[in-house]
Length: 226
Image 1 (spheres, rainbow, N blue to C red):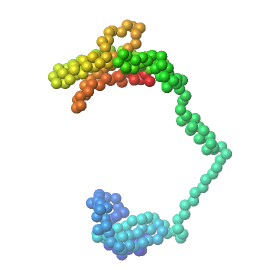
Image 2 (cartoon, rainbow, N blue to C red):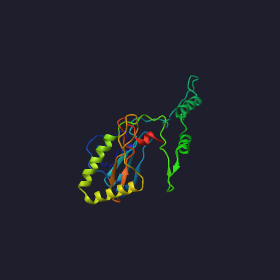
Image 3 (spheres, one colour):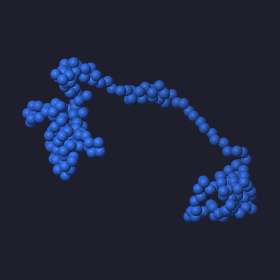
Image 4 (cartoon, rainbow, N blue to C red):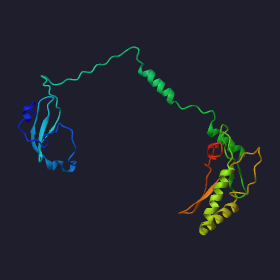
C-alpha cells in the first residue's frame, strides 16, 4: 500500500486483499446496500480506489504501479488491401450457398394430377383417391415383421386389461363396419404394400395408426408419399 499515498492511512477490510486465498463469506446484492458507506478515496489514472464498508475499506480498480503523465490512450488502425475479397463477392457466395435448390418434381401439380385421375365417390358420398406416392421416393422395405411384433405387444397389453380390450375390439369392429378398413391378404413378390402398426392411447381412449413406422430400408409410408 506504500506506493499509493491516498490509501496509506486507511483500515482495510482485508489487509491481504492482494494475496489469493479462501473465500470467507459471499455477500449478495440484496444486502450490499446495508454494508457499503458513502466515503470514497479516489486515485489517479491506473490507481486503485477505496470505499468504506461496515467491515472496513475495500479496494477496487486498476493496480498498476506506473504513474503516467497523461491519460491512457488507445490507438486503432485499419488497412484496406486490394487483394481482400470484396463485400459484394462475399454476399454473392452467401446467397449462392443459401439458395433453395429447385425441385425436380412439382409436388402440388403431381398431387392434383393423381387426384384428377384416380378420385371417385362411393354410393354414400365419400371421396376415394389413391395415395400420392412420390416418384423419386426410395423403395419401401419389409413392414410386416415390425407390424406383427407391435401386434403381439398389443395383445399382451390387452390381455392384462379387460376394459381396454373391450374398447379396442369395439373400435376396430366399428372401423371395419364403416368401411374404413378391410381384410388384407399376403402380398405377392411383385406387389408393394405397407402394414401399419397400431396401438391404444389411454386417457381419452383412441387408436393410433403409426404410418411413420420405418420399414427395413429405413423408409416409412409418410416419407414415401407427399
